[in-house]
Length: 478
Image (cartoon, rainbow, N blue to C red):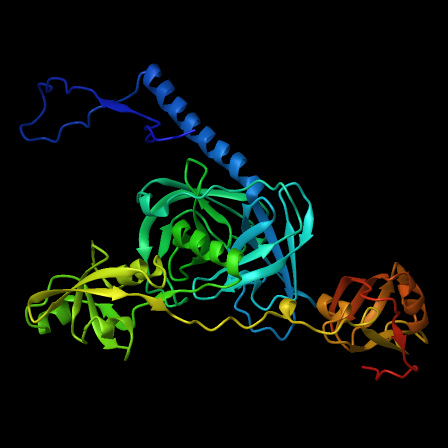
């Protein structure tokens, strides 16, 4: 259903005509304020009906799109330097983000920073099912990544043409802020073509005032037709109500490439450019009012072959006027290596035309995440134990973790040497032998203590082996 109407005013007032002045009013005395009359019942009813129609439109969009929105939960090691904002701090660092299903066979697009340094990835669907996510590919330059889960027949989100979106139109953000799944917020499309944020190498954002918080990252920004305009990516920290989303045109281009080849190839013209500011234009003879100023040329690159020079001002590219450097980046990004673009530059007050044959940028592949690294399978649950004295229980020994095999089940769950085992499958203060016995079936629920923190972890055996024990050793008393 297409929805294209403005919000009517909820209350309408009319001004009563002023009555005749009273006989005792002094000349020039201030007049009494005119009386305000409420709108007629029919007008109020029409306004309320319009508000209900708008509310129904929001609800219809949320109901239609939410099944294709997923929660993405990741775990990383304690040594991680990821900038991801964690919603809970305990022994296992967990982060929550969002994602959008764009292929019925389980392909999901999300933000790269949501899965940065992930050791495990879990994807929760709207219907409650949880799947292990695996990484198809990542593009840190645009902060996008593609995951896949082993599921078929999933509801797929439709993508809008973000280039045709109008500033001021209603938008809806859906995601999992602070882990609160499938939260819906509304606002407007505040601006397009935002760049220069300095966070990612390729920046061409949609701006919105729809409420976005940690956990919304990777979720969709949707128009009133229920189509995805962009992928919510970040909040501007120095402002309120300023969220940024990667536009759908960029999302589909990156996601489709990753799904097809596992990586992204970008076109390149071999120039360094910057905005032509009024201050710069005032110092450049016969400079145009706007454009992108060329400040460097890569030797042997497409721009050098097209005879561009430092000091040139790019006025048009691909037949489109260039307002600033962002326009050049956007136009090149949407092209492929081998494409030919007409370029017009201003040099010394004169205009010159040439043609640029785009080349591949040859970007380095992103480093593999911990979840992607190929390691030898670890036997058992990957922990070694010994019995130590438990300070809180007189003359009682309990199991303590003494070693954790790298990339084992226990390592991925966040178990660390020195953790004390308070429970093993419900048995309190178990010995090493008791923990080994409990792990015989290959599954183990542990309650651990690390310093002053207490937490649960669930382990499942990688291969047919059990937890290893070590001789008992005393633990220093505090």
